[in-house]
Image (cartoon, rainbow, N blue to C red; front, side):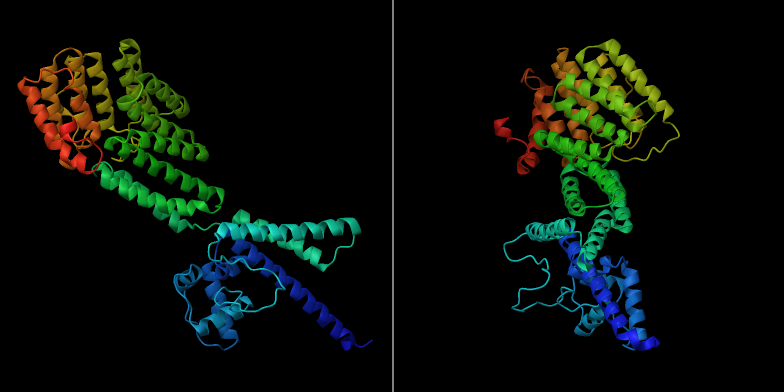
Length: 487
């Protein structure tokens, strides 16, 4: 039998196999478009497993092979087209259609006005319909059709080409779902750098503008986290989310919005728990102790500090040292001097073991300045005045409000001992040390509380009232504090 006699049948089988492959690829493209919410153009690239660079290289190779000239395309332009930030020229649309063996409609670069209802349905979000609704409807229809096909094959035992194409299509969809991510390494690196910059700026930036910056960044991170990501990417996004929400919670505490501060700490806890990193979980709880110490229950402060210490473990770390120091200060204020001294000694030991580790001046890093802050606050509550050094001897570069908080701790201790005049004098001095943009509710409220039992005729009391009156207008304008007339 001559070799060429069967060539028409072979050609027909080859065409059928090619159609099945092309049909399966189109199914995969639609699944990626529907499930992942990317454009059809991007779904075509992802369906082939190409990076943006590979797609451009394939396009250039196609143009060389078919003598189509040099394509006016680049990685940046392709990203803009795929994310609907720009539209390719008509000549480029034709080249993309050749590359992906599709038409402009299937690339999402043209409208389809056909009146027939046959063929596979493309997920297009219409007016008044959310992308999620469209994706859900498409998945439901596909799932019902596939179930019917598989049940029929199971009953009849006669799988056909369509059956195996569906099997292959499901595997492709699953592989894409498991490996797909809308966030690349460059984006994650930039996000990490941004979070690090915010943690550094937070040491000196007033809480209100800092809160605004953090909110904008959180909005971007939430958008990135909305799509399904590989686990390694998801962990980095959750870690960044934890740090940003901690900054937001601390800023809200300083501004006096304790309700929102508590809820943001709750969000930070949820994010850190999802990451599963014990040290990160300990950090969130250790940081929240400050809110509870100033605005909450001291018993709860101690409980949370001990929970943080348990999560942090025995290795020296910022969360472990902070938790021990926070526990010591709360116990001292509760009057449990013996337990406070033990906890303070443990904090000192943990911090001593941290020497040589990174001591960058960042938010959430327990540095020498933070150790001095907590040590001084604990000694004030213990009444060890002889062990408290003057403010001039503290390490340089203290956080803006830390010296004021220490003086206010001392003033509160004096007021509880009955020396209201000296307490008011220290409080006025503390407020004057704080720049106007940092003079937020956390310092003003504590200073104002000293006036409750003080003799209004005392000169120090009158001076404190004057300083508070000067501080109130900015807080009234921001809506964070009542007017002076209502004080």
